Length: 97
Image (cartoon, rainbow, N blue to C red; front, side, top):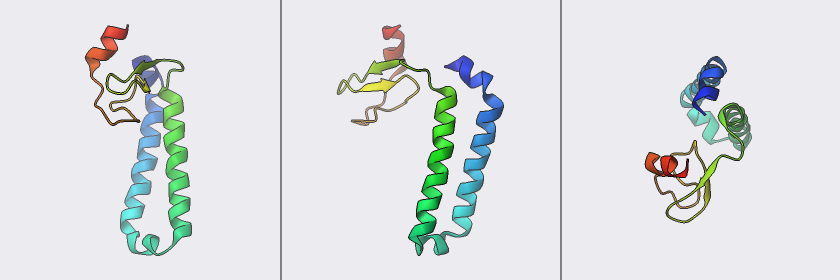
């Protein structure tokens, strides 16, 4: 995963900048956004597209580990289990290798 992050560092920085710009715009226009569900849906869609693009660059297929708390298959990139919220420890990653 580290190599993928290094390989795609420029693209990842660009995605991060676009996400930051989007969030900055949301803060500037929060009152208008709160009152318009179409804006909310569009913003959510744009943010999720950026998130998906980012994850596709760094995700290593089939590299998962079971959560020590609930057994849910978590991506090694994750810091927390998506099912139970347990913080995943680096020691768990080393034990699986």
